[in-house]
Amino acid sequence: MALKLSSRVVVCILLITYNVLAAAGKNSNLSREKQREFDNHLNRLNKPPVKSIESPDGDIIDCVNIAHQPAFDHPSMKKHKIQMKPTYDPQGDYVTNEEKAKGKSEPIAQLWHLKGRCPEGTIPIRRTKMDDLLRAGSIENFGKKTHGSIPQSGLTKSVNEVDNNGHEYSLATVNGEKYYGARGSINVWNPKVQDPSEFSLSQIWLVGSSTTNVTTIEVGWQVYPGLYLDSNTRLFIYWTKDSYNKTGCYNLFCEGFVQLNKDIAIGATLAPVSQIGVGYWPGELVPDLADGAATVQWGGEIVNFEPNFQHTTTQMGSGRFAEEGPAKASYIRNMQIIDDSNIPRLPKDLKISTSKAGCYDIKSFEIANKEKSKNEANDQGYKAYNEQNGNNDYEQEGQEVVTTVAT
Image 1 (tube, rainbow, N blue to C red):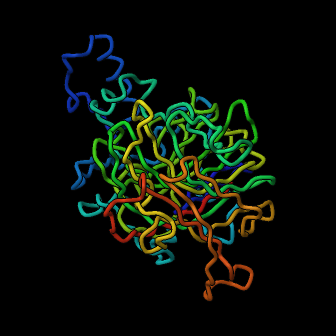
Image 2 (image 1 turned 135 degrees about the vertical axis):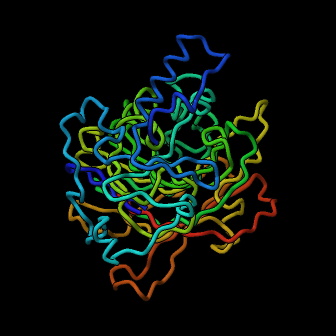
């Protein structure tokens, strides 16, 4: 899949919408003022659809005119012109809707496709409901990661010295250059999450150079019952430009990300997928990435909110440790970065780290790929993960989602 950033920052990786006041109804636990505030916020997020599709998992996918999507509510986006292809397109990876229609890309499957597709000129958006806002407790908290979501393990401190506020990681990290993109092939699992407030994910991070107001753009899959009210494995994106404080959000829960693709709904349940163009973060939205990212990270993350030094049983990746191999352990392979030559290449001096050895782990290995060019003959793959003490019976084979990120 491909997400991208415009301007110098092109990000390729690997998105409900109408007035829902009548559908949402009134909540007797809300004050009149809070009810009005929540209703207004739903109206801002849920634009009038051309068509609506009810997914078998209960999601409602609204097909919204591409020019009416929430991204353009952002003050910096009022004069933004939609960019249908990246400024920088590493080796022609990005595929438009028109090119897909001509057979230049494999078909993609998400669960909602069983009930229909969005027409040309629209994008699919998972509808936000009143219950989503009520679970968050406030508009300010809705669709946000908590503080401490920036993985620092293995960069400047020992992993045991880092306090990530309950967030734990198994990571492969590269830094020291300017990165205009990154890639990785991530196999998709459905890990067990113990508590609805916890989550498990596998993703790619692109991180800016500022250490005071950290900018990140992120993409991958996650299981997060507290956000989606189920345990499905879902495609997600995230961005922030102030260390997860006031800016940014998951998916399309706030203004910013510009969706282009009419077939992929960000936040929707994953089925087997192939590579495709999805959308982009405009350069004016994340200026700290305009001259490239300072750090790229591939890996897994969970949240442990168990009290009294207990550890959650929430699994990372597949729930299996790395030594069990790629048939059982979660992995990210075909890892590459995009440099200023706009050519994907293998990362140099990759560091691996885990914040909770014994509960989660990560290992690196090399695999020969005869189908690739000589320059790419030794793809670096990283398999990692998983459950506390590693003793669980989760053994489902993973599906693969190819993600390409380019800044």
